[in-house]
Length: 190
Image (cartoon, rainbow, N blue to C red; front, side, top):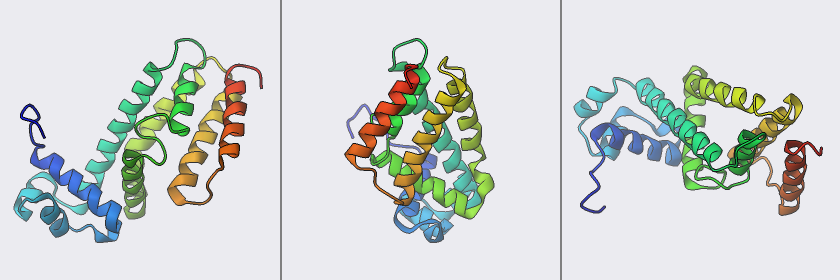
C-alpha cells in the first residue's frame, strides 16, 4: 500500500474478512469469533458494526449488489451507443471481458458470497434481485427485441451458473458458437 492509500476502515476489514472466510470455508465456517479474528478486531468491535451473522451476510449482499451495479454501469459505458449497448455489456461480462467475469477472482468471491447468503437465508438475495430487475429492465429497453434480450440474459445467467456450480465447462468451440449466435441476435441477424 502506498502512502496515498488509506488503510480500510474496520467495517471494510470485517467484510473483507468475512468474504475470505466464506470463500475458504463456506457459511458454516462463518462465526462472529472467526470474523473478528480474521479482521483483526475485537469481538466487541465487530458487534459495534454487525450485531449478528445475519447482519454480516446482509451487509455482504448489499456490498455485492452495489459492486455488481457499478460493474454493470461501467460495462455499459464501454459499449458504443445505440441499440444493443446493454446487451453487448451483458455479453462482455458473460464471456469474460470485465473485472467480475466468470473465472476472475472478484467473480469467484462474489459467487461464494452469493451462495453463502442463499444457503443461510434466500431472502438475503433481495438486494441482488432488485439490482438484477433494474438491469433486466434496461436490457428489455435496449432496442433489440424482447426475445433477443431474454436470450442474452438467459445465456449469460447460464454461463454464470455453469461456472458457479461447476456443472459443465463450455469448450472454446461452444463459447464461440454461442457468442456468434447472440451477436447475430443483437444485430438483428438471428
